Image (cartoon, rainbow, N blue to C red):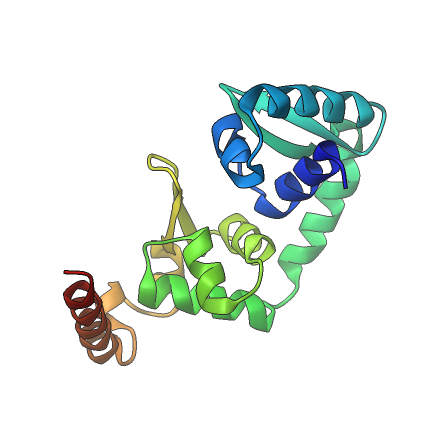
Length: 177
């Protein structure tokens, strides 16, 4: 697999904007080589359904605007459907463990959570804090209202689970000292 193919796969799976520096660390290749491979990838995607976008040195794969009407139709249909078990799992983790990063969710679930996060964010059930990198996800006020709750601490067993989490974190902190 050549570097261009590796970057395409990484960008596809990561789903978030990513810097050349992080791509270089991930692939153990020099930043200049990454930049060249990204340019090659951009050229090879020309005229296809996805494109490589670059904003302020961060790269991400995105759908080509010519497919917007199809994507909009898909998303509208998706919003009418019930939440999948995977989406419910991500929502619960965001509620009980949030704010949490995408990689934190994926470490707990053992699978890519990008689709579920996108779906929940579009529905307004998850909030994404974009002021920090990596982004943090938490349950939204709209989701709490739909559950009839005023705050996260009113979730069933929240206090018990929060104490358990704090004990685990304390134990881990003690191990690293």
